[in-house]
Length: 79
Image (cartoon, rainbow, N blue to C red; front, side, top):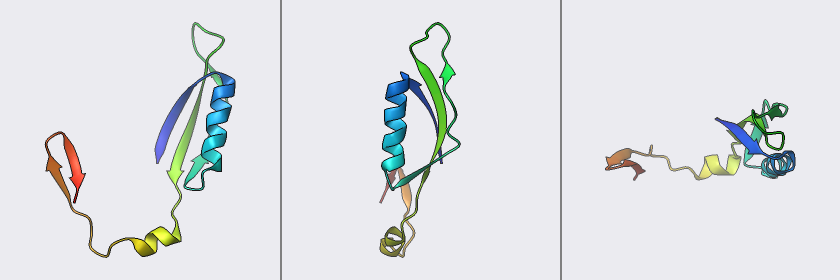
């Protein structure tokens, strides 16, 4: 689950939320109403939670062996 704070004009935020809602790979939960930002009337903010929607096809194609992660310098890589 990801918790997002989206900031912009109301039209930009509505466009982005509709874009997320149309994507079948993600599900939106607990989308808030618009909040005002201090110092400006033009920009607003909105909070939402994004979850990955599991797909039955994905579950069938997953490898049987667990994926091992290893450390390589600046972050983890998956081998």
